[in-house]
Length: 297
Ligand code: SF4
Image 1 (cartoon, rainbow, N blue to C red):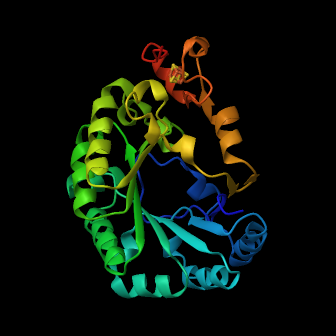
Image 2: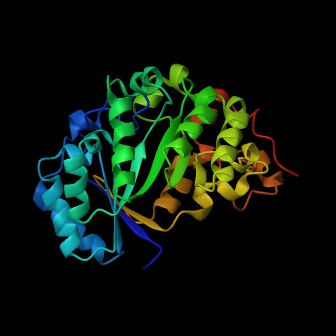
């Protein structure tokens, strides 16, 4: 029970409108879950794990966010992680209440090193300054702060700059996640999804900055053949077992990813990483083909 976790999606409403959002039109179709539905999921999740992840949408903009946190605390979850765009944490009093009510692990989304880049990707003016302030506030309160950066065509050349900012902000951990081409990211594929081969050196330079600074760093959605020399930092290989409470319950996220989300080519059978590697998001080769994927001898 110690290593697995439960991920509860509280709904899809959000105060950002990210250009690469995987949820797409779910915010219109499903909105947010009712409080009672979430309480039931919190109770069910406790049978599976001591670690709960609050995610959305954006959980912190719910009026009942602090109440639900307190309920999770009373259910005795050992770890309560908040996945967030971080904007609400620019308010120190809100940070303090969140910590008092039981949250003890934070994952914030930062997609640029300057406002022009981050705010462009989130379509929310002022979001860069709010998220950066949120990171500073939570670190000031001695919280564990990780970040997630989605790799897109707009920001991949700046990944080392983003890493430098994250090291400066003293985050505990950062992840670089290759954009999953579904939802809005699929709708605007050509302007959002970069070639994996073009991102490779920038990803490695960004990881190196964190490694040198003693940070925990990782990537998501990047196959082994683009990670030579850095294969120990592939999150899919080190992620815990995870149950997801979305609109439908997903009992095993890893199995779901491999069966439904990812794809491999016939030539992958020749690759030394074939057994460990999940492949790439299946929409990627449907658009770009398999030429960039070169089996590692
Ligand atoms: S198995 Fe295929 S996708 Fe994975 S690293 Fe090897 S060539 Fe790349």
